[in-house]
Amino acid sequence: AQTVTQSQPEMSVQEAETVTLSCTYDTSESDYYLFWYKQPPSRQMILVIRQEAYKQQNATENRFSVNFQKAAKSFSLKISDSQLGDAAMYFCAYRDLFGNEKLTFGTGTRLTIIP
Amino acid sequence: DTAVSQTPKYLVTQMGNDKSIKCEQNLGHDTMYWYKQDSKKFLKIMFSYNNKELIINETVPNRFSPKSPDKAHLNLHINSLELGDSAVYFCASSQDRVNYGYTFGSGTRLTVV
Image 1 (cartoon, rainbow over the protein chains, first blue to last red):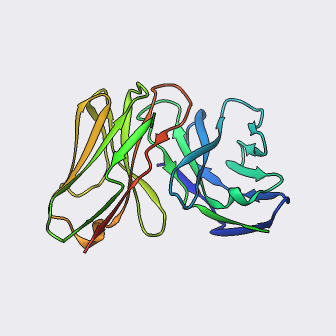
Image 2 (image 1 turned 180 degrees about the horizontal axis):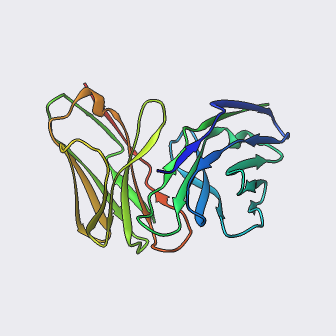
Image 3 (image 1 turned 90 degrees about the horizontal axis):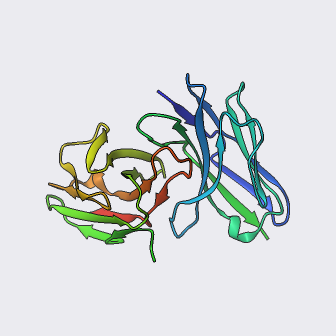
C-alpha cells in the first residue's frame, strides 16, 4: 500500500522569507500524481500544487514550487516570500494514475508565519 | 456557486443517535468521496462512489452507510453514534482520469456528547 510521510509536524518562517516543507512517499507504481493541499483555520482544503510523476519538470504556481525527486521518492514544497495568509496545515498527498483515484495523505505540517 | 457543498457545517448530537450529512457537487464530476479527519488532523478515506456505484469501502464500522441517489449527491448516514465518531467529515469530488486533484467541501464538524 502507498504511504506518505511528512516528518515535520511544525515549521515556522519569518514573513517574506522562504520555507521548504518535506514529503516522502512509498509506492511500487511508476506513474502517479502528487499534490500539496493547504488547510487554513477555516478548515477548507485548498489545492496548492500538483505534479505528474511522468513529468520531469518541477511544478510551480506563483510563489509555490516543488522539488520532485522521483528516484528518492521525495516531493518537497517551497514557499517563497512567505505571507501571513500562508499560515495553515499543509498536507502532501499521493494518488495512483489508474485505479480507484483514492488520495492518500501525509500527517500534515503546521506552518506558522512570524510577522 | 459552491462547487461541493456539505450540510450541516456543525453537528452536535448525543451518543446513540442516528444522523446524516449531505453532500452535493455541481461540477459534473464522476466520483465522490467521504474522508474523515481525526483530532490529530489525519485524513483517511472512508468511501468513494463513481456514477452511483460504490468503489471504495475502507475499514469503516457498518454503522456508517453512504448513499448516492445520483452522480451529484453522496450522503453519509451514521447509526448509533459513538464518542469516537467525533471528527470532521469531508466530502470531495473528482473527474475521472483528469489530474485536477479533488475539490473538497468545507467539512462537517461532528461532535458526539
